[in-house]
Image (cartoon, rainbow, N blue to C red):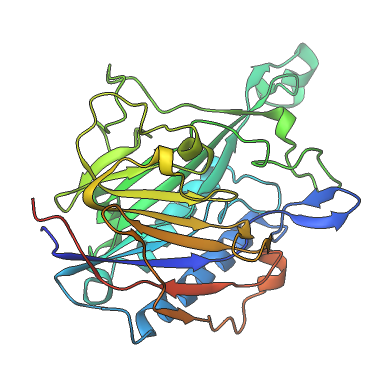
Length: 339
């Protein structure tokens, strides 16, 4: 369906590494991957409740699309990246949380970013094969990582239908802030060991327009709206602006950890909007924290109308995030372009 209005909701939470002093950093998270994922998904559920319960949220208004965004790096765990199995379990858990049609039919979730990893292998030596698999991890080669955003429409009743309501966008450019510089005693991945995987080109396209919903490209259509997603540095590097053959972009979405909206990177059409949710700093005060920004392309920045805190009872937030559970920021409902 085509919506008349859009309402942006940002969960402003610091998703940077924990700073231990003397320039040493570590990834925040629980030591067991499955427990870490479960705790973060539970915290997402608390944030969604806070957003729905806010009086300024349009909740179930069928004419207004609610766009709820988390910052980059919300999902990565104590090693800096989840395993392939962990990423698949995370996606299924998130989709299960937002499948309720009565509650989430008119919501679109930009689930921050998830960092996953895989290891390159080599044939095992003769002695290794005697006691193990034919292929083993090749520690001389970089870890293959992917930093991607799951964009999920809610309200599909059956969890198995979740993928039909989802798109995935891969980050192209690796920033020096994406990984800690040196692996600490906790086994966190150091940036020097990481190589980002690019979006797929197996369909023969060089465009940023998605051909398949999980191909990693940045532009797609959902509910007759054209959305463009840029993750942090991709926005500063003008991923969308430099792309050729793009359709008019209604909503430009920028989840980040260390970025604000850049005037020379904006591509949203007249009447459209750009929306940023950042997990690194409060740029108004100049301190570490989080921030958000909505810009109407025809009239400038839009002010927050409400803020809400989370009920985090029973969730070990201190272990998951370096600076607490943050806050939910609600913007007013805004008119969408008519054509």
